[in-house]
Length: 361
Ligand SMILES: C[S@@+](CC[C@H](N)C(=O)[O-])C[C@H]1O[C@@H](n2cnc3c(N)ncnc32)[C@H](O)[C@@H]1O
Image 1 (tube, rainbow, N blue to C red):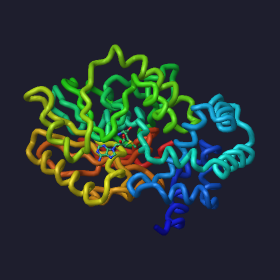
Image 2: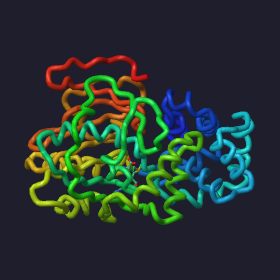
Image 3: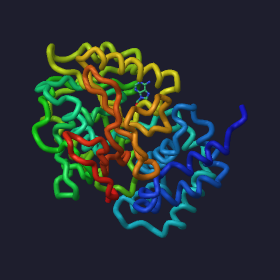
Image 4: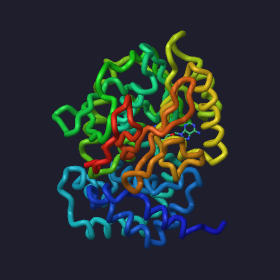
């Protein structure tokens, strides 16, 4: 089979947004080097289509480091400690490993990118207030849930600046974001995933860790805090299987009379095109019935479904779209966010207020 190396090059080129490249010099240096490296291009081009994501290659390398690779282990540990070596030196070392031992990386590429980002709960919270307005009790169903950390969306605080508390997410709001007032009571929490990860399983924890970018120490601390706090949080129920096969079972769970709210964040991008359209149609129909609402957070270029009415121009290149469907309603544009929830631009005017379009940071 002929490998599409140009496609792989483009994917490395898009891997990090400009704002993430500014924050993450090591990862920015790596993806730029990979754009011109035959081994890195071939590795990515060999991945099955729906997982052909540069983050999978980066996570595979990070996993090798976490598993004690003699070169990558100390290098990534320095990066995580915040005491990195010069970027050129680190990139050259990683490339040397890639060239000498490509099979080590290739052996991990059967995996899936399973980043479970609690920061997305900072975006889900106000969207939940919006779609569930008037409902006091909600059955939460998170599709493509990974380890289920966003099933605890009501257990995180949100603030515009980082605080001492790792369970307080950092999100800068622009526009009339619904942050005041109680969230509805979450009566049940159900996740669906093709390969759910278990926060109590050390191997699953390690893969989750590998999917986090090593320059973002706060994200590791947050995940550790979640793993510790989880024992005192309510139980969740996780259904293993393909989303389209298991959606009806998930929607049937929970408390009678409560509004079912489906969340799916950076999940549909990993489905084949036909499955994306089928998923959109299933949820749109379910919401039209009046007893289900849906919050979707996806990169528009990665999903095949139509832009919802009201879609504005993204405030930044690479912004992720927040789409909401209220019970009895149709999909509508809610706003744009950073893909890990670092900022949220709420576009639609709420209750007569005017949306402001200042820069997000
Ligand atoms: C990038 S992760 C996002 C996880 C989580 N939604 C978040 O935002 O933190 C995508 C998840 O979708 C899951 N997934 C991919 N294809 C799936 C399918 N057909 N059915 C169910 N889950 C799927 C993967 O296993 C993975 O855990």
